[in-house]
Length: 198
Image 1 (cartoon, one colour):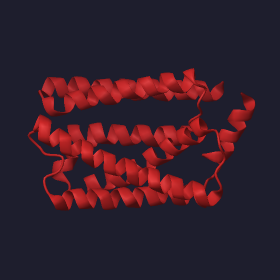
Image 2 (tube, helix red, strand yellow):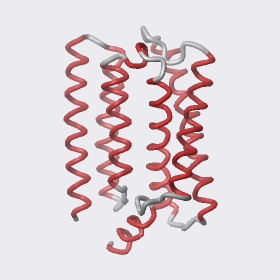
Image 3 (cartoon, one colour):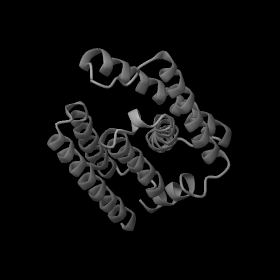
Image 4 (cartoon, one colour):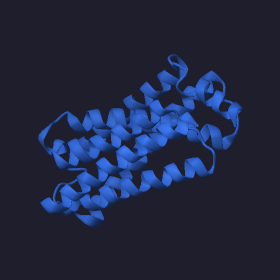
């Protein structure tokens, strides 16, 4: 029950911050990122609803990491224009974003599959999930650039795409290392306790 209250509080704070950023983007007339902000805010609310409805468990460390990824994309990347003004922001965002999203996806896959994975298989699974999601994200960026034609392209060059994929691989590797060697009880142990409590 304490876990649920913390999850709801974090979700409420996240949603309020995303809505404030969305309102500010509307005031500034920055139409390229308004739809993206709406999708992020609504998407996280839908995920949280599904998490509670289907009795899934997401460790609050992973929850906070995903929320920070989404907020840094919205605030630092889109609102403060970090993707354009900093040559390093996009790389860092891809590394940390893939790290957090890979941990999140691994946690969900583990529960939906209902199976225990060996330590070796777990870190391979996390790494492959991160790599796969990074590739899917690059495809989405390609379609956004092709169909929506924003003022600032997501993929200005092949070099940018390649560096994004390399950064995704680094983030996926860090998530895999955490699951294999430095779990800290953040993924498996707390999840196992939560499942037993249910």
